[in-house]
Figure (cartoon, rainbow, N blue to C red):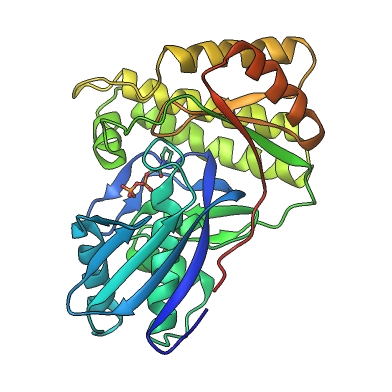
Length: 318
Ligand code: 2P0
């Protein structure tokens, strides 16, 4: 939506099936691995930018410390040319900072809104590249369905693109284990994970898993997609537990109980594979027609956990 004073963009969040968990360059925010994600229909950020006296940030009507946004806007000014101070007004339909990657949709929407506001004529890949400096996972939120963030080795070649796949009846059962704000930021978590003796092995394995994942998606083999995603995620969380520089975990006892049920569901013949991000929530990869039964199975056993069913979502819109 464009009007005389501002510009609005909507970006949906994404869940990585092959994770980004480590940085090769802190300033440019280059990752150690390429990553692959599914954009989700149910969670998104709507961001409006307006000319103002100074850069500021409002999320769901609450004023925020806008330091990270201000720094990112300054990166955009340095890269693309100066523009006036902006008031950033964000409406977030993503549970904040609990491992549902609100920074992905936030920085994607912000990058797109700023670009439109300034009449920059950029491709989705160019927008993706710019958004990386705000948050790595944002690179993948410009595209509908599956996206791959190619790690690259310099500023120019580290961005995401859409991955064409056959029409997959894939769904996620999102288990909101805890709405608590995470104690270890993603950036700090990655830095610590990179001190694990297992880190290089995870990087090497991730490249193989990405190739296998592409093949599984091309074959529309949701079971295989789930198997690879779960192995990649569990290995990522193992890095946190084996960090030399202060081991930690985002997972809690409820997470572990849900993981145990995911295994039980598989024994019953369901397609059900888990992935977790920088928080205790579990996202269960399954087929659309199995998602309601999985949700029901879990809802009976975990009265305090909220469950959602999420499906593939659209790319950026204005
Ligand atoms: C991902 N996560 O691939 C991984 C898996 C969380 C776990 O990307 O430091 O907020 O802003 O580039 O993108 C979350 O990290 O990190 C994330 P920064 P970001 O989705």
